[in-house]
Amino acid sequence: MATTVLVEPDPGGHRFQAVANVASVAARTDEILLLTSVGAQSDPAFAVYLGGVQLRVVEAFDVIHPPTREMAAAVADICRTTEVSTVVVMDADQALKRWWYVAPLALRGLRRPRVVFMLTRYPAKLRVTDRVGWKLRVSKSILAGVAMGTGSLHRVAGFAGRDDMTPGWIVKRTRDPDVCTAHSRDRQTLRAELGLPADRRIAGIFGVISERKNAPLIWAALESRDIDADLLLAGGLAPEVAAWVASLPPAQRDKVLVRDGFLSNELLDKLVAAVDVVPIALTNNGPSGIMGKALAAEVPVVSAGSEVRARELVATDGGELADLDAASIGAAIARVFARDPAAPRRNTIPPATVEEFAENLLGVDGDGRVLKGRSRIR
Image (cartoon, rainbow, N blue to C red; front, side, top):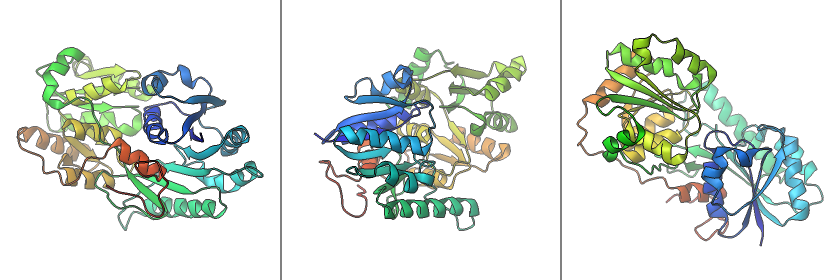
């Protein structure tokens, strides 16, 4: 049996969840081999997401961001001893810059596998006036075309908003899954289980919480509208965020609930479903995995800083839009709290599934056969 090689050196965040999703589809036809960094198998994320996945692991990299030359060399080493059908680089934005040059040299004289790149920072939807976004999009499309011209790259996919049903041209679009194993209808039960206050409104920020997620801005937004609510920070807190929490006066600090550290997917889903609103103030112009969980759990989202998320919220009727400032975000949170929770959502798009995501990334049909031409959008 042939082998699909998944390249993911960084176990951080929930990256291994995406590996597991792709592996489940690739395993229909191939054995799976994961190329990762030293110590990755001892990371809690490995046991949570990959503990039940049938795969072989090679810890080939000393760092979580290895040079592209080392990644190509590690792939070539596998190709010398294994029949490799497909190589998938799961976070390929940096590798794309040099792959066109280093991969042909590394694979010289070897049977070349089909190579798939997943871009996590490719802006699929842009305003005409977004010069920075267009610069990124054009440069990455050119690099992808050059790599394809050398025969070292065969397919490139990028995260698309859940409302985006178009296939894409050079960079294929694959909708970020919206999956949550818990639901807001069980909020009170979940809060009792998780030790969260039953009688308080809670806004939640989740995942790897660095300065980019703007926790102080969300807190200022709540204060700007005099909203009596707690702020939950759940996930790995960066030192600067932990320092901000510690600097708050006691009366404010008591309203900031902290769950610092790695969260299993089950626990993360429960925490998302237990809050009243998920504010996402993030300038990354792409979809959000946390937003997908909130939509699936029917927890309203307040989004600021992304055209992609804005379009998605409108299509799903999943929350409120805001500008990237405290007054606007505070007003949007107030509108969420003023909503009738029993009012039905006017969602106009089908759910984005894990299977669709992985199949479109790999470019295969339901039987694992490689598709010709454009991506399949269900």
